Amino acid sequence: MNKYIITAILLFMSISLSAQKESMTFKGHFYNKEYDIYLIIDLYDMDVEVPNHSMFGNLPGYLGKRLNNFYWLVTSGKIKNDSYAELDMINDFGSEDTRVSLKQINDSTFIFKQEEGSTMKIANNGKWQKLPKELKLKKKL
Image 1 (tube, rainbow, N blue to C red):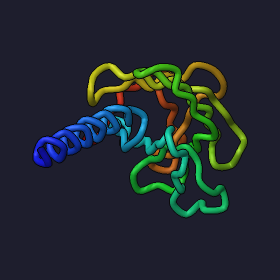
Image 2: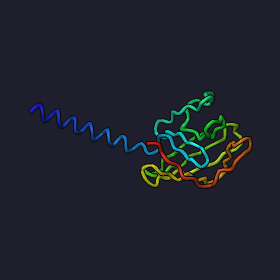
Image 3: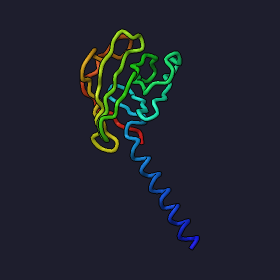
Image 4: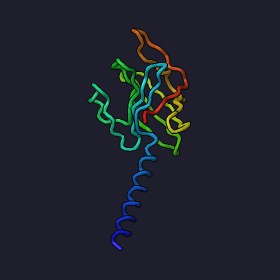
């Protein structure tokens, strides 16, 4: 009898753990190789600290470029459904802001689309490079 109870408890725990893992669509490290950028977000706990920018405290996330200290900060993020979220972002100077959408295409591919506001620019070899309105991001699994 005890075996059945323990087995049922273990089964229930494994099901609940797998369900929690699946619900973390908008948490993690996303990247685009072509522009050498990455997006770190956690729209569930909203507790991401931006490197070398601790004065901002914990945020829902940020977009950065490898080997660069310039960031676009996620000031708010709203999950609209299982595969779609909206992010409000500002550059780390506070001079430009934009609203973007993040849409899941499959387990590891997302579309990052600038919906309204300023065009996002990143530093690239000492110059500002505009990001396209729509980018594919891959999620590190």
